[in-house]
Image 1: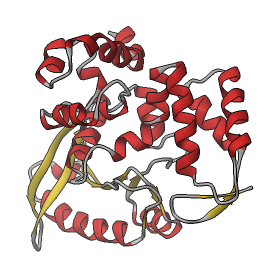
Image 2 (image 1 turned 180 degrees about the horizontal axis):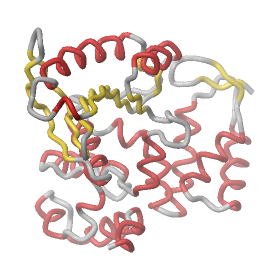
Image 3 (image 1 turned 180 degrees about the vertical axis):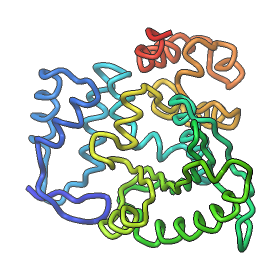
Length: 280
């Protein structure tokens, strides 16, 4: 049976891919088999991946909110907002958790012109200029024009960085971070030019999705117990991560979450962040 991807491309329905995504979310073998059986019985030629996702998400949510929240990760990042700024803050927080010092939205003088840099990250003797390419619609690729553009900006900035005291002993690198996938040409050029590329599933086993799962740094937009309005209020307050609210009743109250639902929200956030909590 052929299904339709978000990009409009047709592909054969794969039980293996669906099973892998459910397993990544933490679903049990029985839950996976049950969901696959139900979806398989409803498949029709041309059915969209979006419809398949909705069916799987609905069944997971009935079993466990945290399972559904993890399964919802890709969509949740796309719900961070149309401007892309919350995504830049999200990337910055992920880097902070890994020991990087970061600055967001800095205006930096280059050799030729000044540039607004999404994220500047520093760790030990390493300086990184990071461009975040955010998309809030599925099926969009980060094409070769992006690394071409970022490489030229990075070289202009690096020329000025090298004039700063001590920077001749530091390593500089340009990064491209995206919540979608890179085209083949984008990967080929980025690797050749020496850029660090971080996409949804690139590098293999170390992409953005893998880092979020391993670190437990889920965005609040993952939470199934919050409404869209409540999520937006939290984002407007600069609250990006579930770990920032799992024990913060006052923040939830200030964001308009009804008292009768606060414990439900906190419990879901705690279950998503349980590995972080145990490490404290």
